[in-house]
Length: 246
Image 1 (cartoon, rainbow, N blue to C red):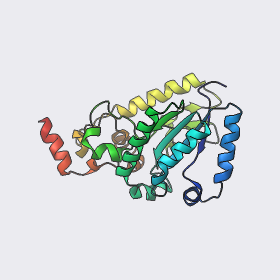
Image 2: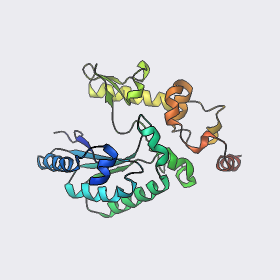
Image 3: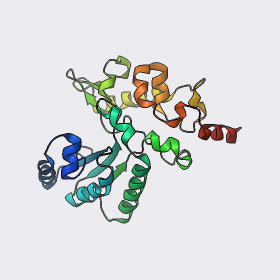
Image 4: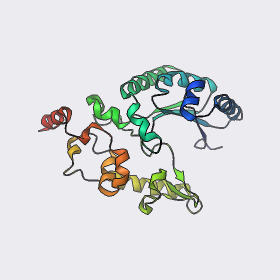
């Protein structure tokens, strides 16, 4: 198996929390499956999607998957898609930041070979001045974990993009991985090559990386799910940022 090949498994909490979030009682089966896959030397990436249900168990799950010997562990905030739309406002992002940074410190001190990725959503970056400095954190909760394939083999980042041919990365049956990666890079570059002229968030220091503006300009029905930061409206914070640059 190539080192870039892996099986991704969702583990969204300990036994009771897992049942609440996913609506199924499969926690024990998931843990046993992870053990079996690891035993056969197959790369496993476990992803934990954070909601208000499981926020307090971030460290517990980190410790658990590290002990299981998985190749990679990623933590991501719930996406504002489908059922996630009602869950996003319920997450305490200050606690998300606290636990995320604590896990990163723990991991840096450990001798584990496990890859760790904590994805910090725009709710965190737009509210904290220290996280708007260039090159500190440049991870948004879009287009980072996976591609989505429809029944015809067409590949997009998310299911809500299926209706836009210009957002199609390619087809699983027709394109090589190299071709798909190249097209993906082109699409993401185009989305980030946008103008914020006339928008309230034009003075935000995250504007150069925010995909929400591109969606707002070209795909307004998608932009609703992406434009979630405090810069949607004028605030004392945005005014202070603007004044400090004038």
